[in-house]
Image: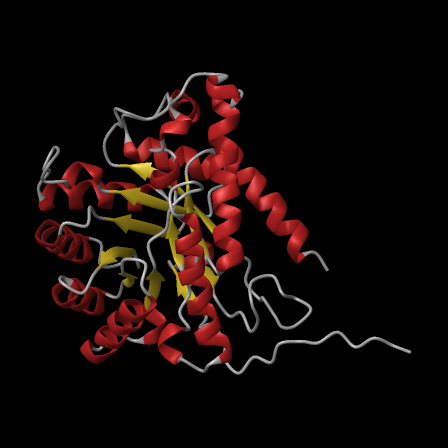
Amino acid sequence: MAIEIPKTPYSGKVKEIKLGKGDKAVTVGGESSYPFYLFEGAMPNKPKIAMEVWDTAPEEWAPAAVEPFADVINDPVAWAKKCVQTYGAEMIALQLVSTDPNGQNRGADEAAAVVKKVADAIDVPMIVWGVANHEKDTQTLTKIAEVCQDKRLILGPIEEKDYKKIAAAAIGYKHTVVASTPIDINLAKQLNILLGNLGVSDDMVVMDPTVSGIGYGLEYCYSVMERMRMAGLTQQDEKLQFPIICNLAKEVWKSKEVHQPDDTMNMGNAKNRGILLEAMSAMALLMAGGDVIVMRHPESIKLIKEMVADLTAA
């Protein structure tokens, strides 16, 4: 007697969204089943990895994270080019760390000039990530939207307290927005509704549910992302059917474990520890429904690409 394996019926589908422009543009989303459940539905677009670049040289990175970029870490343009040319990055995520009012407090015009130089130097899609300070991000991201109006950037984070001006600039200059909310499915849905009411079309939105690494709240983040995918795929909730982006690298590499010396508390080699923490955290988020993961170390990215290839093999 043949055994019939029960399957989950899906009434929804994740929206397909094109990021970037030209030959190197990528398409994300399109899933019609839970992540990697290829026996139940389709996953037409593999998840994408965006390599992280900072707009200023980091001062507190772990040595293992600095090592691959030591020769370019003082130049975001050279850094981004190395990610693309040497490590094969399919996307770049430029973190605007220098604009933080509690740090260097770089002005909007200066930040926009840096973003423009990086965008001109690469041909892959670029995410531009602010510092989650509403006033500063509004100044900076709106200026960047104008200066880079032909680049089709992915601008974030856009939150409920600053979405109007930033999203309006994104509409006017044809960029994609990252709708960012603090680990709450209802807030995520509400922000997507507000963006739609403002006039942001569905093909211009990706969601950032806020994420963390292993040992620092990953389980909670995972459950929220999982509920988003359940609502979008099985409950026909169109406002939760957007691709998900996970700004992971900074969360993993700021943890105390990656900074502790070799063999601290029998945790083994520090470099391998950091690489594995990032890769394991990334894989968990992919299993929760992540479509774009921002990562830092080339070896972590290599591991993730190998795992994704295995999971999506025919």
